[in-house]
Image 1 (cartoon, one colour):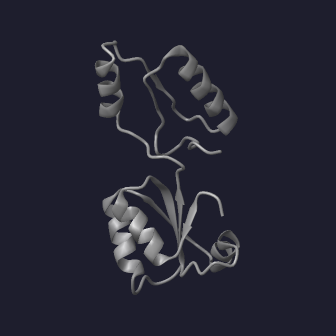
Image 2: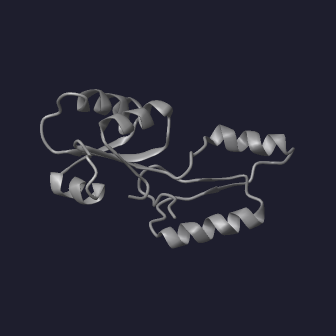
Length: 136
């Protein structure tokens, strides 16, 4: 169960803590109980919410009690553009930023990240939607 959080309370705590959440899967049907505030907080945080069948949640949870909700999370916390610019300023350098748009192959993104690291890039901008996220 790599890079997922399973269950209502763990998902809510991840949202509250500001952890980078790629998307939240919620069981199709009427939202009730503690699912309602999870959906509300996720929408406020502009997290993608995707309804899915119970069978898919069961498979992803690998036997854990998902309670109708699973969140895909990042291994690390993304930073803002302001953080990238501050990093360059702190080094007394002009900002060197790579913008990635619509990169869908994780191997290509990995090659870009490794090359950028070697070239001294201060940060890489990856859109939340329409591009692959960072993974193992």
